[in-house]
Length: 419
Image 1 (tube, helix red, strand yellow):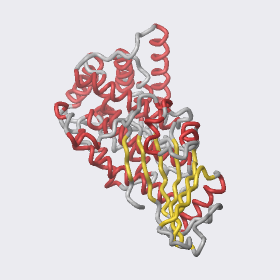
Image 2: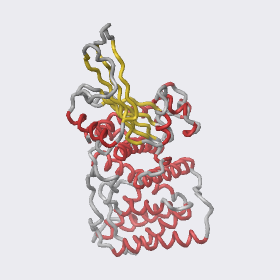
Image 3: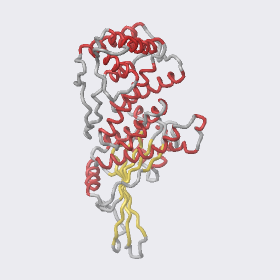
Image 4: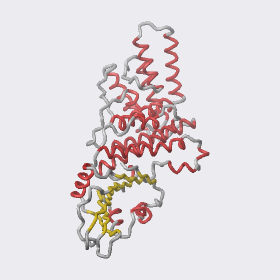
């Protein structure tokens, strides 16, 4: 569904009679190369990245939970069955048992590591107990499943058998309750120990009986913030300054979820570049990510507005996750890295089309020639048919093809600055 196309344009001076050309010459070092990407939502890709699909599923589940939680309604995903109830309860018991038998305070859960450019996507390995619990309960089907999960945690804490690892940076309410319960268990003396014990037990009972979504919404927000920080900052795709506006802890849950969708969309563009043009110099791919983040920052104020302002003119900058995203990347001219990259693409893919047009020729055929070269690096049938016509224009591809369904001009066009 998505595609990547590489365009090159350059001019050369020609002598008398030189404006007639049949063979495309080597591109000039002054050629302006533009990498054009049309990125479909990852869920529409037949060969989507599994880690990114998992991230998509987590955001979708968190979004659903946030809506029910904010509305104060019970959450039911699908009709509950005895088989699911039994299977889910067994998984929770196995998870708690494995956590009980793990060494208390162990850091063997793994450490965050940089995302290697050669990897499709690395999965964060340093999840603490609350985050790992969340990855399990996101497969729950209703509030009763969530209540049962909290009850299992409460029982383990009460018997002091469960002493899991909670990362210090995890400030979600569930993580705080677990951390405080562990501190009570370890303290030899504690003023008002019974009162503190009753307070923690009361909080857990409230979650179990009345608000089972509450702790898991907060843990999910914490986990996804950590995941995106890992990908963008840990993977050296962007700076902390660029990512922080999307992960602002002062924002409401639904505002954060909207930001998560934008960040996922940027990661999908990165994934498309890695899949379609793996030889593209990393610095240019990273600059593309940075430019997209800077572009989407303009949408954050609109996201934060009340729903009755949705028709504001500034809403045009806001990308919905299901929109198609068209991105143009202008690569530097006179760059040895770019020339090497283009030569490698040309060796691997036949030119889809090239043209040579005379510019202000004199009566003896001298003047300048402007060359236009198009290389396709990912060529589904949609793009092949598009370029089968010399008159076809890439800008009207969406309108000209029925394979894109009811797309029309609904995709968002983004043009990066010259890199």
